[in-house]
Amino acid sequence: GEDGDGDRRGAPPESLCSEHERRMGDHVVLMRTYQAWARGGHRRDFCERHGLSDRGMEFARDVRKQLLGVFREMERRATKEGDKGGVKHGARREEDEPRGDKRKRDRSRSRDRGRDRSRS
Image 1 (cartoon, rainbow, N blue to C red):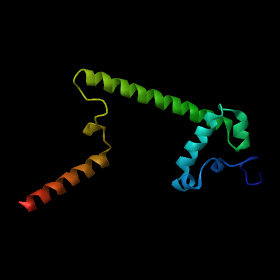
Image 2 (image 1 turned 90 degrees about the vertical axis):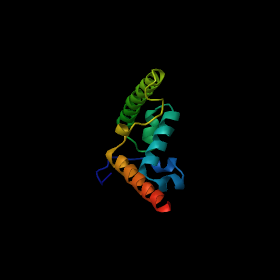
Image 3 (image 1 turned 90 degrees about the horizontal axis):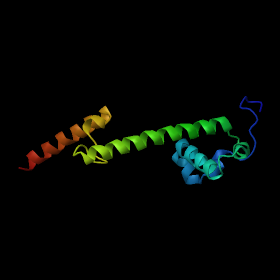
Image 4 (image 1 turned 180 degrees about the horizontal axis):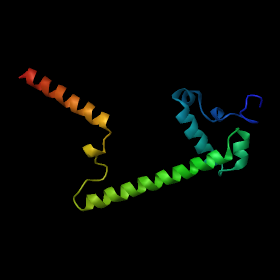
C-alpha cells in the first residue's frame, strides 16, 4: 500500500479472535493467529488471506520449537533431580526467582511477622 506496509489483502489477524481476546492484548491476538495457522497446516495461503508474512510465521514456529525443547529439557532434569532426592518436579528454588519477586516475597514475610507479633 501507499503507507509502506506492503500489499496487505484479506482479513486482518484480529478477525481470528473474539472481541474479548482482542481487548486482552496483542500477545493474545498473536497466539490465536499462530494457533489458527497451525490448525490450517502452516499454509502460505493462510498468510496471504490474513496479510501475514509467511517467513515471519515460519520464524515463530522455529522459536516455538526451540522453546518447547528447552522446557522439555528443564522438565527432564527436574524429574531426574527429583528421583535423586533433589529438587522435586515443579518445585521452585529461590535462586530461580527473578530478583524483584524474591524481594516482594521477603517484604511480604516481614509484614506477616510484624502482624504476628502485634497479635501477641
